[in-house]
Image (tube, rainbow, N blue to C red):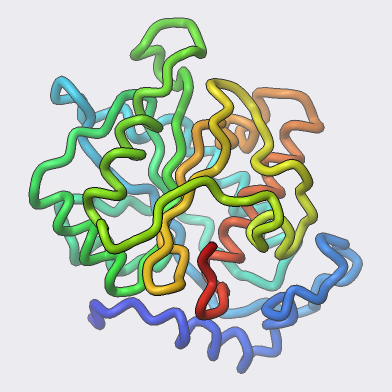
Length: 253
């Protein structure tokens, strides 16, 4: 197995299959009528398995059907052919992490990283991997039935700059391509629940390597909210995946 993530190889495969029309961001921003008749190579999706405070080893895996709904949305509206399997990559196993160029990380409690976890995540970034980390506001009720806690967001806002201090970490501006690369999303990150800090990112050598959200768009993928919120959450998730996998170099902020 090649442990070196290679986004260029991914792009070449898309181009070879005739399914790279979205790479220049020139399509009609989500018009399904313009979807290519063929799709690209099968691409994997994975959730990052991580331990949380107080030894909690279960909070990371809430509502996997939300991931599957986003996968379906991406494959329906774009030429990306995402595998319908819900894969797991353990943070303490670098060889598992590097199988996936894109990882989704989600929990209600604050992550509790070991030094090995931090080293693995740093190496994952350096090899070209991308992390979308999102606060699950009340997934398993670990913090009570209220939405004014953002333990995951606050911890990750501390961990990411420490793991990759060379990176620029800050709020992603509203005109950034991640909000417009496929669907036009005005006003920044759609807010679902929780504390609306907005979308934060980490840029390393001109490449966006991580996005951090407090807004629980994943719960919109599950269909918990209104139809308008569900649509906005799926569109934001689609944009994040497409931009992460196809961003130009440099592609930071």
